Image (cartoon, rainbow, N blue to C red; front, side, top):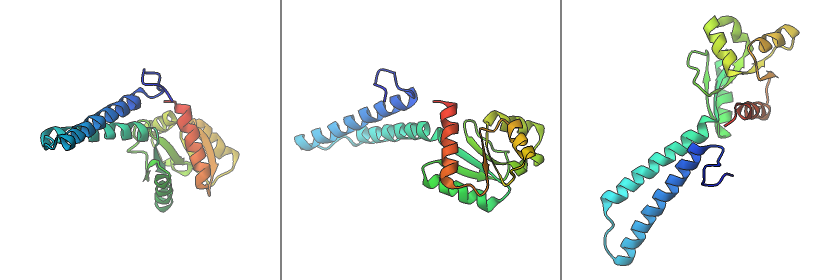
Length: 178
């Protein structure tokens, strides 16, 4: 883990955590002082500190979860929902979609190869840029070639075990870097 001097691999996270710790320390000191003095703590300042701490906590969550955002795009809506729910249980910010229309920057894409025939050239470019994890029931060489054509980071054959998918997602996240 990096030090507080900026050597952290994620400087935004380090700054947000430092700010959160500082704000909570100030809030704690204000309350302890009021307790020792027997005077009421100024509610306006306490409320301001709580608001600041909540804002910093949001920044921490954004930093942590932005690196774990996953979209599962599958023609089987129920399977996509079940997969996304399993990933959420494991701490991923996962959602399911039937199409690539709402692809967000930085998301890891788990993509059912059968949908490739349904998307336009622009969506293929977006898919290629995302280096998707391809999931498919097909094991033939032509399907593997299609996965290569979209620059897939992984090729998983259905039914995919959740731990196998998580390993592929973690590889993809590590490949993307901080």
